[in-house]
Image (cartoon, rainbow, N blue to C red; front, side, top):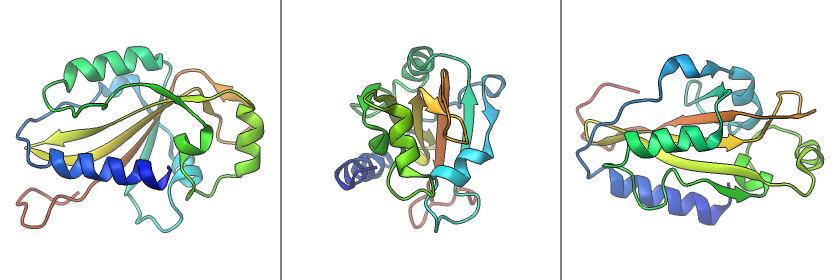
Length: 164
């Protein structure tokens, strides 16, 4: 993720912690846990359990439409809006993946990405990144459907909720 985009996302997350709206996750039956993607795209120094990854056969438009409906009350402007970006913006620069293999895989095409927070008890608990199409874990072919990368966000100091 570019530094500018990371900073903008951090500002949005900070602003959201003041809101008091709870949200519900995407139905679990639609998502398959895919830890191989954590090994590829999570930053090398990330604490164990900070990231998780899931895949779905649903289209990005379907997932985004559902998220916009479910999270509309708590979503900041720009959340859950799909946009076409170069692969390095979609997957960030700090993962352990082979950058040249990813670049060859996407070629001149772009990934569609939607980002947004998950809020519980007025606190941002997770930052979600949805990517479509996405590579298989061997970076050999692009898959249709959606890759969801979840970052667990620590609650602000003084928050009395449970540990993440």
